[in-house]
Length: 317
Image (cartoon, rainbow, N blue to C red; front, side):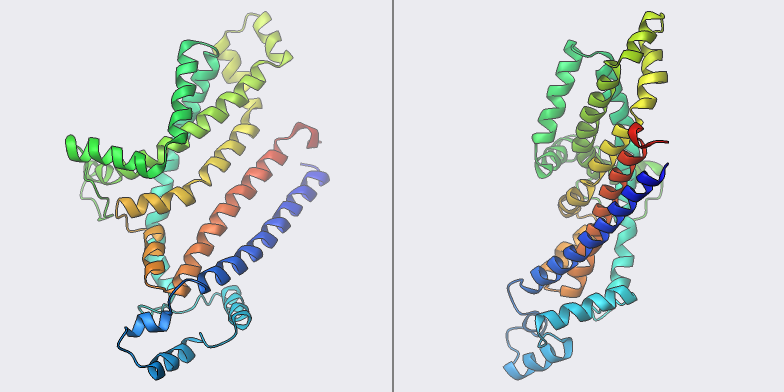
């Protein structure tokens, strides 16, 4: 990796930090403008205006919005994420209880979807133009177009209600055995994998076909190398960059789709905690949850950029 590539990566990192700063401002100001008064919701409708005003002062809600943002941002940089309005506990403690479950769900989904997408994309590229390839691409296009909540609803109706194979809700309770564990995660992972596998398989196929049309691969075929060997030994290694970029971009979808999936299946993760915090007007908890999702999303986009730069042949040297 030469100096030019390192400079590009440094610029991407700088742009990512600037983007995160902008996101923090947007998150704070948007959440602060949510309808309803947090102090009023905490005290109930029977609270007197004096009591509400006193609580607003205690929570710092009577300060100008810009002052509150700067205090919140400086606290975030120091590792002080604030105190929950609802439970009066540090929001970092509340998030720490939920975030492992979300990462576990995302990790299982990644372990299932990435190998499956690579196999499907490889098979489609090997059979390019065939009935199998056209049918596969039409199916993946249809899956990508279907909303996640519809996929989840259909999966629940078939596998939970009709066949009784798996539970309709994934409550995240510790499973006593492997079968119970797999059943608990089956529907959330299946729903997330549907769109992820379809996206990654299409991108993998496209990257491999671009390599198959290159002159060096034509030469390997003229030398009598089998199509499968040429694909695995020559096309696939040279398509690692675009494929890795496609996987990183597709996985960034997880941090949007997981919000819907956790809510549908009552999964006790960070996304369902975010939904509850919004309904309770628990602003510090909402802000931290959204910032964590934003950080994960931006990190995956940054990883995709870095992989594109690192595997770019023009930048090697």
